[in-house]
Figure (cartoon, rainbow, N blue to C red):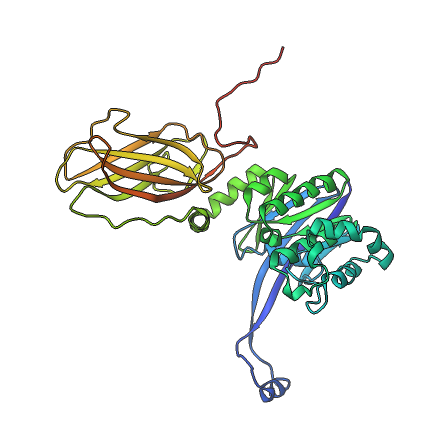
Length: 402
């Protein structure tokens, strides 16, 4: 298969001066003397090819060099060393607002931005209605772009880019600005373009999208090429390399997505929750679980009066969907009348599909009629999966053919 893009031994570094100049005099005197600087290497000796008609993704943690690589593919940066060759026309969507004049209307910017892709006025007029329909900005087309929301800007930019009929399309996280419906429209377009033999180069932190769409994935780490892999292999390696960073980012995302609810003040003289822990199959605390593996949710309870109590645990998806719930009362489990106790809910096989979830934990009276404490967002976690099955839970199944 013929290659759409060829990258050979590419290295990119930037020179960072040791002194900062903020005055006209400083700039003038600087012209006549050498200013010490440091070379900051962003990418080191990276080589790969992208085949025609391929959906090719680039992943890596922040600072790995993936955005710089994308800008070099788009021609915004030149490699310090090495070569990049394109075999076909290219359209890029890598930074919000690039190619727009914010003082002009959306209508004028369609013609302006399309010209950067080599489209003539006649070309634009033939697809003009398609652009504004796809961007969903018919009512605002004559407003200045500076008054558009970031989502409107993305929709307009993407709508123009896909009408450029380029052979190679380069896209980065800019699509994350759009809402869920628009993102789905974009991915539908990706499928159509791929069916037409177009090449798509995609950079994203959303590993599920990378898994669902990619043919091959380039994994970068600290400016170096880890390798080219099948999607699942690339994601597994990425998770192993960046586990700590992923846990932090996932916690922030899941916490921000979960419904906000006020939690009442707790009377510490009554039974209450000390903490809730989530353990993986090895017994280590975690915020990331793999579907199918065992895990344990621990409910640590303080019971100052040594009363007869019940404990309950439930799991909700980040959009509030109630996935599972149980308690010691309905399952006839006796909680010891000690000042402190730990109730462990063990799941031999995590059935939940990929997504963001949170644990709801509670302590109740013996008959469950009195609620001592309920923590709505006791623990946040994310589930990863290695296949493309869909839905809320993964049901054990087999196929039979006759």
